[in-house]
Length: 503
Image (cartoon, rainbow, N blue to C red; front, side, top):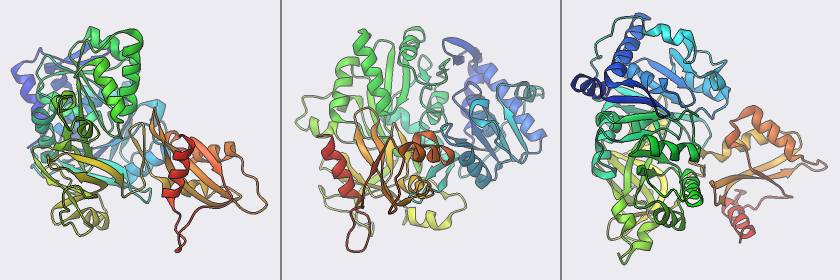
């Protein structure tokens, strides 16, 4: 089983079918895309890379991303996608930990990244030189062989490499057709969110269907550009974090564009307010589907279908609108206590999931793997409640992750940086509700006696050590932090304090 076979199958059957676009300009048909992917695989093999070895992608969205993704799989290699928002030293740590041989970068983020074999700028002539060899055959891979090594930070702030096999991702792709959206060759997926995580794996079901793949000319998200593509390309689908959905709806409402040209907008990755999705459906129509997944079970835990979202006549529509839907077809989902025992309906517990989309474990981290995978179940770290109809509603996270604009930010990582600042005695970082980003990062900082702290200096320190999007949006200089009898900081109290400030 090799994910690259889905590209090969379409290319053989219909080589002239449109495949890859930059904006509304077609770059490749399926025959041309498969040819380049096979030549890239030949270059990997000629350079001595053997199946199972890792290749890092540290890039902003770029048409080369799909070539590299499928070229690596065609050669039997493992893709290590790195969030383009990360600091260079964070990306380097991931590359080193993954023991990746090669790296591919866009120079705006990846200049300076050092791979032991070769670092290739996809915008330069060195990249094009990789297509000189004759096309290679698709490498033979077993279903459980590693395909995607996705790094997601843990509660300690240290990234963990989620090991996903060809079977994991194949099951995920096929499930999309059943539980999210049927796709055919007329459809187009636009990559406005980062291809390194959320958006990139949407390539898999759309490649299976022989659909069109569109990378915006800007390489990112601009509402006007996306609406223009919906008009010129048509039948457009996309993944959007709630903050992107809100900006799309704002644009649609301001311009009167409605949802014409869009087929499906899948949202997830962060909490979505019921009022916001209700407004989105009113303005753009029943084009929305919610998914709940994790890097450890990508795209597949639960789904809230467009029919369920639009069924305003249902007596429990309001509750369902606030939920994350029902278990997707290939997985079992339960709400359980700390021992993994199922809790009665209506009781809050940890969300557990098992099935063929669940990861094999964390790369080079057996302790974390053993903690997350118990008795065949993935312990997600998310707290939720199940109702009698099988709808899951998330209540809280057992981990203190802050989700801002669809990106996970782990407080301890930020706290450790701030504690490097001269004059800082204590720090506690929490998320505060925000109508645009879902949550923003707020740092409560206690100065040492006799010291005055400067928020600008703290911000500069953060920018030197961590990615820009992780730094606090606000610093609260306080004389002390609330603690329990054991000396543990009461983050719940801090969150309540922030919530009170906004009401």
